[in-house]
Image (cartoon, rainbow, N blue to C red):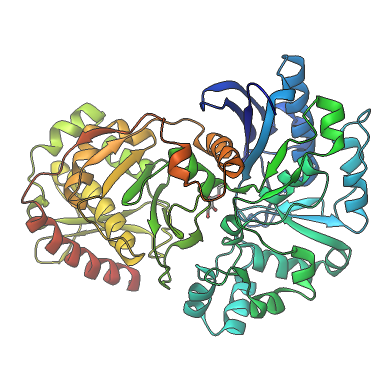
Length: 525
Ligand code: 5FX
């Protein structure tokens, strides 16, 4: 392709499809989105999802995603976006969700006519109209069956990177096989939402990539092949229905003739494997080795790049989609900003006052430790508020200035403890990169710096997942062996927000040990 080139990143997230186009210098040249609830109200979703009567089954209609993509591409066309410049497309999907293509669908997908929409042509191509998504929590009995078949939760974690989780695709598929045999038998291909999205651009089944494939409890993450024992436990002929997984950097094909004829994509435009939203978002943030990404939102997520995968019952290990290091560790904590906010409201009334009160107690909080799980936490599985004095005795309440420090210290001791269990090693190269709403709060950042004993940087990258899709598309089209760092080298660096206070490790390291024991006590309560 001569002249200016564009790379597109599509983020098929839970609530919307977001698109970003960048040029060869990674400058954003176009943005668009379609929101499922408001732009496609006919599907009746709330937050992009349908919660069933049992409250634990959560799905989204696969045809809705197709119609949303039609809408987004039509919108780009009507706004004059120049598709002829697009050299590569990649993106991501909300992790774990699965799409069931019915027998004969491949043929329809490969022969779509540009005078009709994809929706018109594909809407009847799904053997299961409602795709299970990551919010589903209905597969408890299947988890037990899968773990039993593999030799226990720890063995499943060693093999696939995670113990059994309800939202993970393997047990979702097992549930469909057990409860809707007709749909299972009538399925010729099971895609993840990511590979389903890539398939729409290719006009053929796109393979599942290693990154998103690691969120299924089906992939042997060290050997990068389906784990046959897991496949056998989840459904017959499952390997055939899934197709072979591929590295995340794979060019999976060219755009379909439908895409070229309808929108004017060059026929040489490459589709690069789509991956999971978390991996793609990480690609958009472009971490370097040694970075600890701490996303402070309604839930808190900690991401670390890892050389090796340790088997643990908490957190998840995924294969890195950028090849910066072999693996990514992800630990998700349900009690994040809302829990901090609850304490702020109860004890201070404003963030300004909260920050002032924080200064009334010393780091280490005179030995007081609080554990605040307003919602049922993921690790440990526990709920409630637990306060301990300097003698590790449970107490009913703390004075307000102790409570405000206790919520922050308790949360970030937990983040550090689980990151270490996942394989985090803090060295001179390490830095914490904080993102998300609460990363604007300097007092919170200082506590993170002191507990992690390293500097904290901040970065503001809205839509990091869609951007990560653009960067990954460009990366895949560069000469073989080009490191990902080469693609993102011109991007703005995160800025240093605070340094750790020397000497405080003497306070926080023993406190971490105490926290560990107290949390074990809480988990056993
Ligand atoms: C990760 O394991 C998750 O389930 C979520 O972060 C989804 O990927 C959100 F889309």
